[in-house]
Length: 189
Image 1: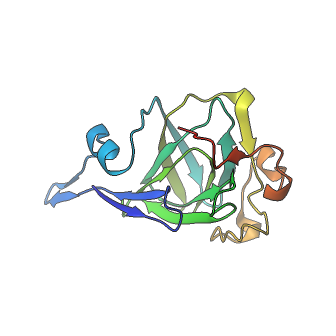
Image 2: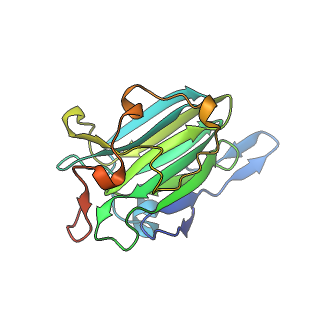
């Protein structure tokens, strides 16, 4: 696998080595040994999958301690714009984001560490999205910030009139008004 650091050094793009022949292709989608050596040591405990149609925007979500989560995300059908926002107070990149297109064609994955809000928009007629988490889902620990916060300057690559949001995702606070954020100085791992 090949890793690429982004503008926010803790958010990593991962591209697997693809082996193609007349039958199709093969690649390792995850190797604990390689991931721990090239990204960081993480113990993933839960795999999730969602299916969404064009225009769906999910996010920007996170979980509060003690249930904070790192995620390793990928798309197995279609394409999404995946976004990670640094919400670690005191971080030199606080409030900045990384946006990466993940698709069934590019096979990219994105590692999003604890201390980031995460979301994605669906760019194709349908997308199947998979992600690994290093902590279990805990509904009482949910947190989120507004997907359309003007201070974040996120171009979701979907016209506003085509966006499909859950009722909950329509009403999250702006980053500057969020009641709970992570501390950059505090070790989240």
